[in-house]
Image (cartoon, rainbow, N blue to C red; front, side, top):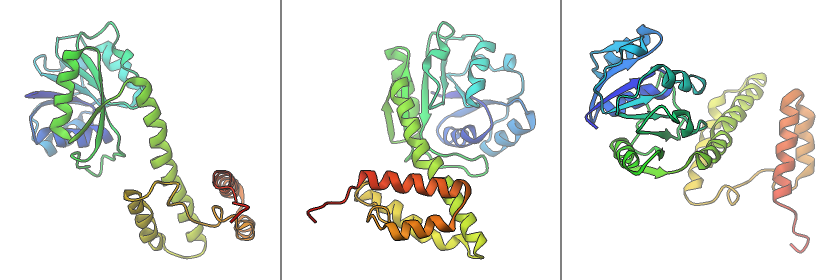
Length: 258
């Protein structure tokens, strides 16, 4: 993989472009908004940008489609098969999006939370790979290992399960922090007070399973504390607190012999 084209300039594309620029030539960057492509190209030392899918350079080794999920099929339909390796980077979309349109294709999904404003180092990110044949898979695994030490083969069904798990682990967890931020704002307290607690909770997962590290009033079945907290809340905060507390208690029944 000496020359790659990045199709996209958003959250995932930004970190991938930076990672790939360190180990091969980013030959071109495409974005529907040319200014976004130009900004990313400048950041990674790429000299060629376009906002026209029909103007993609024809001689790259790989074309990385890193656009929003509902735009992937549109990109594939709008571009010809030139014999290169074509890859999309979605965790929830199947490899079948390429069916009948590419001879060599695959999926390389980095299971990580990305933002355009912050480049994520990729060497410890877990990538999950799938390809339409063994030769394409070998090339895709090589591409993945250029970016990370952790590249695992996973089919579309497995990747969808991983995607569900990542929503619980990341997106829902972040929403809980958003609600905590609002609770603290109402009390005139800083969210920064939560950061040591959050970091310790995550750090414990290096040694304990999530179930083993569960603490709090619900796991103790401290119904008085749970009731007091519920009385302080309203709206969706109250519903979410009650639902999660019940879920924790259901998974941690009281031991009558204790």
